[in-house]
Structures are given as C-alpha cells and as structure tokens.
Image (cartoon, rainbow, N blue to C red; front, side, top):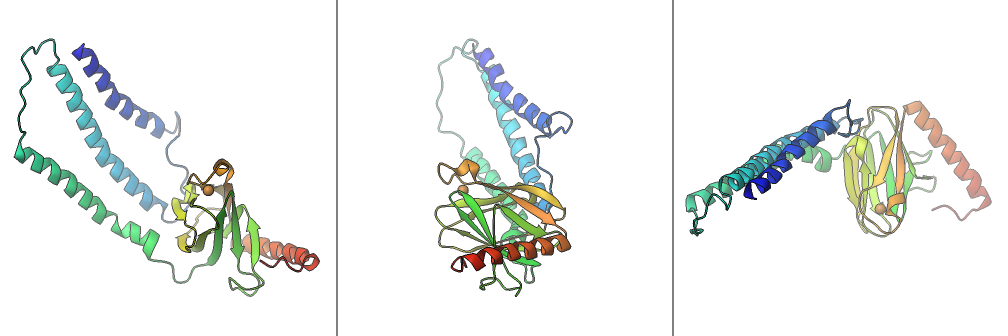
Length: 261
Ligand SMILES: [Cu+2]
C-alpha cells in the first residue's frame, strides 16, 4: 500500500509541472498572462516569473523527497518500531536560514519595482482621473475645459475609463462604501480602494484598444457584475471624446441645474 501512495504523491509534482507547461503553451490553451499593454508590465511579469521559478524548484524538490521517502520506508518492508529523536539542531538552523535568506533576497530584488509602482508618483502626469468604486459600478471624474480636477466644469462618466495612449495616467482611487479592488489585468495594475482614503495609482498604456477593468475584491452580492472597460485612445480621439461627453453633460445640466456633482 505504501508504494501505491508514494506514486499518488508523485503525481502532484508531475501533474503540477505538466499543467504549467500546457497553460504556458500558446498553441494549446494560452491561459498564461493576458496581453501586456503597459510600459511597466514586463517588470511585474519578470518578478512573477522569478518568484514562480524559485517556488517551483522548492515545490518539485519537496514533492520528490516526499514521494521517495514514502516509497523507501513503506510499512510492508520496514517492520521495525519507529524511533523518535529530538531532531538535528544543525538541520533546523539550515532550513530556517535558507528560506529567510530567500525571502530577504526577494524583498531586496523587488524594491525598485515596488517603488516605481507604489511610491514614485509621476510629477507631470499626462492626465489625472478620479476613480470612484461603489457597489456595484465604477465612476470616473475628469477635468473639464479648465483643465483642473475638482472644479464645477468637471466631466463625469461611468463604467468606461477613457485614457490617452503613451501618457502617464494618474488615478485618484476612492471607494464610496466598502473595500473594492481596482484591477486592470492587461496593465498589471491592482490596487485596493479603501473607504475614507484617496489612493494614487499610475500606469502608462502603450497600445490603443479596450481591455477589462474588474473589481478584484469580493465586495457584496453584485461583485460579479462590477465590470468595466479601459478604453485607450489616441490623444486626438480622447480629447474629442472628452469634449463630446462634456457637451452632453452640459445639455443635461441645463435641464436639471442641480446635477452638478
Ligand atoms: Cu467591488
């Protein structure tokens, strides 16, 4: 029976590795990363691959050892009583230091990527947008004709986040109710929206097109439908869209003068 279980355990690393190979093969499933359309996406992808490589080696080595010991010391061929020991102090020190050193290495290795993504806010962004998350939709606020955000001529829009291509986008992320998570898979951007906080998020899209904007935090019964789009346009198309949206908004406001905010 021991040999049977050792083979079953050996299936875990074998199938695990096979699944990665199949997923990464574009011709078979193409379930790997979605297309990267941002200037810094490759940094995140490289970090992911580095950590995946490290953990993958440890995973396979551990599973192979487990299967080997099950095979080698199965109950049928080893009838001796089990001997308990207090273990090896040296071994414990070694297997504490190696993971600690590995974690320290990852912490130092990713510092620059983290700083670029979360600390070094762009000083002169091409555009600033306020993103408000609420159960269960996304709302966006743009600067109106005066070019300044948070003035009476601001432009509002729902569900579709329009941004110009090849420009730094600075988002002021807010939540009106509970925790949400602003997730742009194709831009490798994910940030929690926290009630009571304004969190800056920035990215630079490099390709014209439309991609998913989803909420990555279970935020209530309608979480599944909290989907939006990010629409990346040329500067001219974006300006035209903004002007048109502002005009439409003004027309509605003329009929209902209270609807300024
Ligand atoms: Cu949500």
